[in-house]
Length: 219
Image (cartoon, rainbow, N blue to C red; front, top):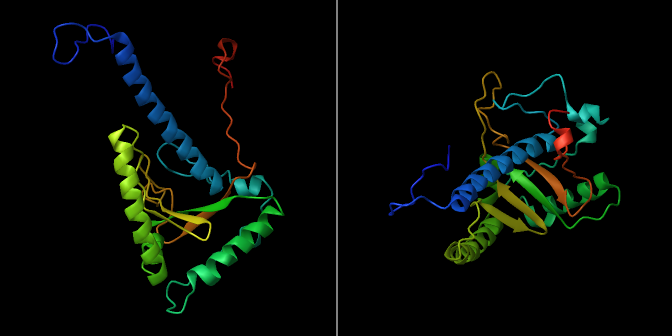
């Protein structure tokens, strides 16, 4: 029904079926990408999110995988934004690298990505040394984005800054409603950030059932 008798814009003839199918596939791909993001952000937080963004309180992934004491098994780094003498690049970020290396147990990694709540990110870029680097990188990104848009290859815009091998990304994404969830549908709390390593083989995505005819309707 989506492609039958659909007229091409500015003409009296039907639109090519391949063009209409292509548009539909792009729309489906976007929905799948968001679903993957929805599930992955929950996984790194140890949570199972439902479509209305509520959380399954009966199933905690950290507990399921043996991280029973989150106070010690999940490392935390205080960025001390309220202290004027805080050295983000010279002290805090190296501590983040040290803790990540300990947590990985010697597994090599290529960098760290931090998904930041809005409050956390804005306090970060308010630091003098970070602000200067942030403005420089944003100017460079703006030029790159213009060139990407010129060739139809634009990507979703994100506020971010990379410091000492760590990329901080302002992450403000919502899904559905949060009836009873108490988080307004936010994937990331505003005043915190969650860090994970890049370039390791510890993250895997599995789809089920298999994309085979005989697997249709199975789990």
